[in-house]
Length: 201
Image (cartoon, rainbow, N blue to C red):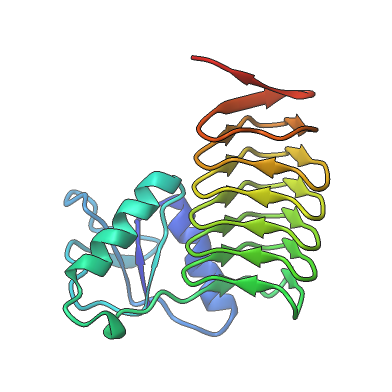
């Protein structure tokens, strides 16, 4: 197993893999000045390395790296993006978790929820029944998403935020820390506050 992203986020994923009895061989990073992370070597070329999780917290960068790794692999079948789920997380047997997604300690994902590819469901976050979390989302620590909510691709829901049931949050949104989301949020916006409001910057 390899982790692309010699970062604090990567260190957390390393510990999740080890808690499940796995082993990380090395990190990979584009920064050639970084040669060690969490006691492991840092490589600077990911060619041929698999399985691999992209351990970068920023959604758009994570997507770029995933697409780059996929394009550099001559035979896509040889490249795999596993999931990493902490043993203390509670994930319903009817939930679906996409490739490359990580679920941190204390997270809860309830019945019939779909979490897409290369997402982060961070420490202590809860995603209730029948939600859809599209690809490349980051559900930050302590977020609570009520049932039936749909979160669009690439959206970041900031630490400690709450989302009421059956809302639609658009793609590529930023929901600020500590927000209370009580109505739908359109695509490509920043919203925050209690209740959360859309702001132009």
